[in-house]
Length: 145
Image (cartoon, rainbow, N blue to C red):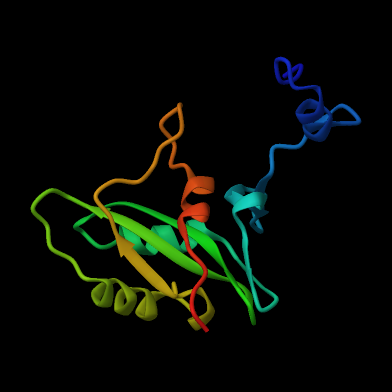
């Protein structure tokens, strides 16, 4: 990659000393295999704990009627951020937030369980068809204390 067309600042932020900084976070296992965990900009920090939304999204996707899942951080005055989720279900399927929360509780540590899960008709997409997480982050309104 030579840079972003017409965006010199974005190029300078992304290409540093000849290295392309993608923002991906990965782990090397004991055999040297790399697994991409998530993206740095999507990471949620809840009370000092780093939470990767992809892990929660994977657990939500285990529910057979879940079509898509997206997890973002919602600002929290005490913890900094808390995970919240949006899911869509297959046409004709019925699902409750309570069922999804219980499923998450049985598969995730307490700090990773979403504070709330909204079941929506569709998730916003960007021009290339990926879930538009910045739009989801903006959709949360301040929660009453």
